[in-house]
Length: 100
Image 1: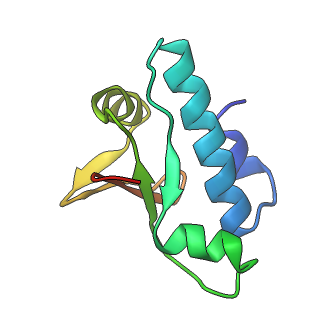
Image 2 (image 1 turned 180 degrees about the vertical axis):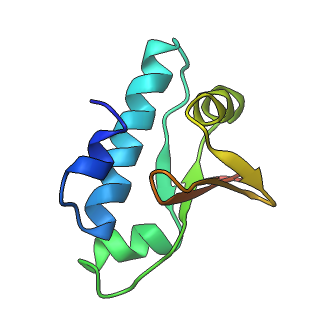
């Protein structure tokens, strides 16, 4: 699974987010991280409602965000405030903390 596939496949907004989470999970596993990305917040509601609620960003819960931050930076994501943004892939992610 390659992140560049997001640009070549015709994916809905929520499919794109699910694809990204699967990609990130694969990269975290390859890096031997025990962190598991969990979609929370507005994008989780978007998935639950079948797209009847729209969210621009992805709120992602991780026990340890540092491996994910390194992966995103390696793939050109830029930190803007609390978000990591990729203009190339048109993705906006925020890592949230707390108890799930």
